[in-house]
Amino acid sequence: MIPGADQARGGARTPRPVHSLWLHVFPNLFRPVLVFWHAQRARRRCAHVGARVTITGRVWVHGAGVVEIGDDVQLRAESAPIELFAHRGARLVIGAGSVIEGGASLEATSSVVLGPRTVLGAFTRVMDNHFHPLLGDRHSRPMPRPVAIGADSQFGPRCIVLAGADLPAGSRFGAGSVIRTRRGGSEAPNARAGG
Amino acid sequence: MTPPVVPLRLRQRIPSELLRFVLMLMRHPSAAAARIPRLIGVIRARYLFRRCRRGSLIVALGHVAVRTDGNIVIGDRVQFAGGMLPTRLVAATGATLRIGAETLLSYGAAIEASMGIEIGARCQIASQVMIRDCNERTSGQVRIGDDVWVAYGAIIEPGVVIGHNSVIAAGSVVTSDVPAYSLATGNPAVAVPLRGAPDGT
Image (cartoon, rainbow over all chains, first blue to last red; front, side, top):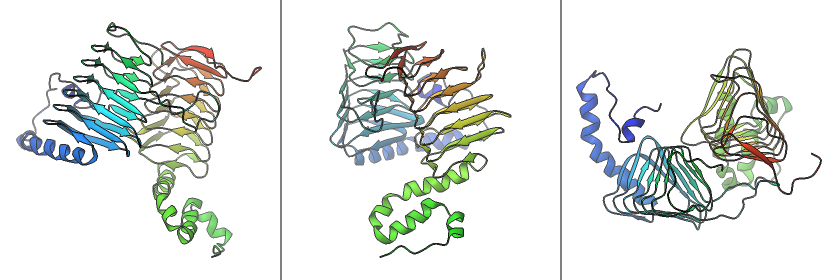
């Protein structure tokens, strides 16, 4: 169990023995400062950062591509860093009002678009390229297939969204789902498909 | 400019990657600068795997948590990629964890041996992969052949033997043996032959 993971998921705060009042007061005092500072850092690396974006913890923005973060996005990376990786010429868009938990890793070699109000659970992986061919030279990179996730979609922790996923609005996936192709309608909770 | 002749005894004492770096720095400084992370990785690997039997030019680009009371054998030119979580190598007392040459391991991969785990050469082990040879129910040696690609988040259960050139799909849970040149997907994983594979293998 990652310390603070339940807290990051919006659950109840685990009771901890109070050793020093300052240990509790101090982080809370500086939280708005840290949130502002992390947002400023992300703003430097991203092409567009919307209004009222909340970032807690570390967010890694890599690559020479375009990363766009919509309004009211929450990046809750207290438990583990969030990785946003847009390769050169690629586009990674996080829709307005989305919530992304810690450890999520989004990698775009062509295009990854999250619709508005998407919820990504902890350690979710979204990628639009398999990066290796099934046979032959494993160091060559296959063609990317863009990923598009409809509005109001929800993903549990440790989901894997693979290249070519084109999901309708309101899709819901339980923990550990592997999503690789187009799906119709909403999935039952805890649905799991082979990658 | 001819490279300086380094005496053989000195050459054996210092990491060859460092030597290559110094020689490169004289000829192509900018190319050498780009190799600094790799150089740091090689030196870091010599420290991290100090209690393992290791080949030459192992690169640790990120944090690797090594816990060994048994034997860990790492082949030549094995690479450990860095990321948000450490790669974990564990070998219990009497256990042998063998990683073949030129295998790539990504961040967050956990390989825990309590009896024996063998990973072949030129394999690719992606992030968040879990390979164990002992769990609450069963135990048995795990063997992974050469050129196997274990994709993101796959779990390999104890006693599984995976043939060479196979692919384990992302997020799958492998509970039974996978023949060579096949693709294993799902939970529990079902193996299908890879299209275009050479026959009779």
